[in-house]
Length: 355
Image 1 (cartoon, rainbow, N blue to C red):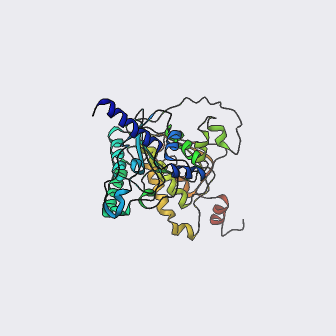
Image 2 (tube, helix red, strand yellow; image 1 turned 90 degrees about the horizontal axis):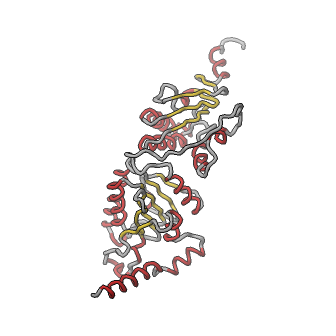
Image 3 (cartoon, rainbow, N blue to C red; image 1 turned 120 degrees about the horizontal axis):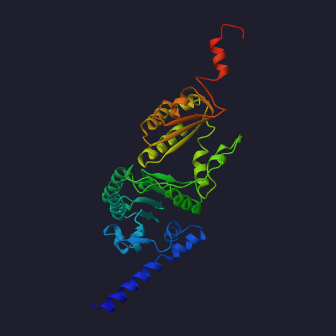
């Protein structure tokens, strides 16, 4: 084949794959106000910075009439961002081509690049039988190997089932689609490419004003920049809350993420104690409290604790207290640190007296 004919054939293939043979499906997504995979790519990465892998690869299964059902990119788009800091695997529609997913995850581990996944998938092809289970096992193995080594972020962009939602990564959900993509872009600005690198640093000019007695302490501390809403969305769950088992489990994962990727931590403490009740006991508050205590103790990155109001009972220790592997601990003028509340202390110590 001459170079002219080869170039023409290649151009025709590229044009066909660019337009896609699933235009009707894409139009239906637009009617349903859902983004197509190409539209999500354009929002996630800057224009012209995404390079796709294995664009013309299709499945090799011949059973149950699936041989005739071959789709562009086999319904999975994988590739890397221009700077190689981010490798993206975006799966959509109703199947998942596991070889492409395993390949991109292996390459991410090799070069030390972050992984961003967007899933809108109905899990594996059941026509592939046991082979589909084996492919998923390969993906799970790479998820575990990558955990704590490179950042992994998963966005659930539509109905998912089975292995498509079984990931060992940071999962972003309960957002609007545009919010999820924008939040992912901002989150990546805080994370390093791998655990061998330091996270990005910013110069923040803070003005130390006197009498900052505001109930919303985050407004006085977090700089007013484009990423402020992300910091607040995480921090607002920490300030002014009693420790329950759901809260403890989530925060221990954040501490482990800090330790893996060299992220410094500032803890604002206002805890009157652990939540009481049989629901908390059966929910495993002791187990999850121990996990958070272990995570804070094991974390080797710089940590600063600010006690804004209450620091009572065992929750004071769990929230990275002065002698629990922290670097600095500050008590604000409004801080109250005690083994328990004053009323409870009086009732116990002076229970035999009329006080």
